[in-house]
Length: 146
Image (tube, rainbow, N blue to C red; front, side, top):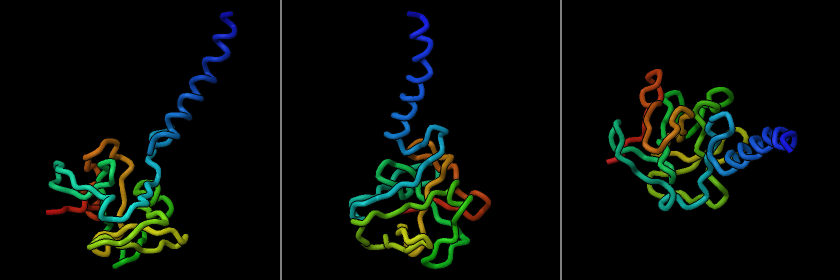
């Protein structure tokens, strides 16, 4: 009987990690996956008071950022950049509202923008309200709201 327990232990651990990853916005290595917001803009974004002030967040409270190297209405963050700064993608049911609009990425996916600047999350922000990416390399900034 002890051989059975020893053989199933690793398999159960892998199964549990897979289940946790499937239900999470992070993969098993703790890397944040892209977030897609399908609902209309005015029902999908939140604001939260943080150490950087009141900022725009995803529905689950993850801080949103802009990138100074993006040109107006166009994302320049791809490849390695997008691994650390996942773009905030829009689902097929996304609808623009007020200052929240959409842009099309080079792969054809839609990305949310605030005031014509593409929006991103940051992989080092692990909990709602964290702002670890604010002023990163002096080119990444939280989206402040009043």
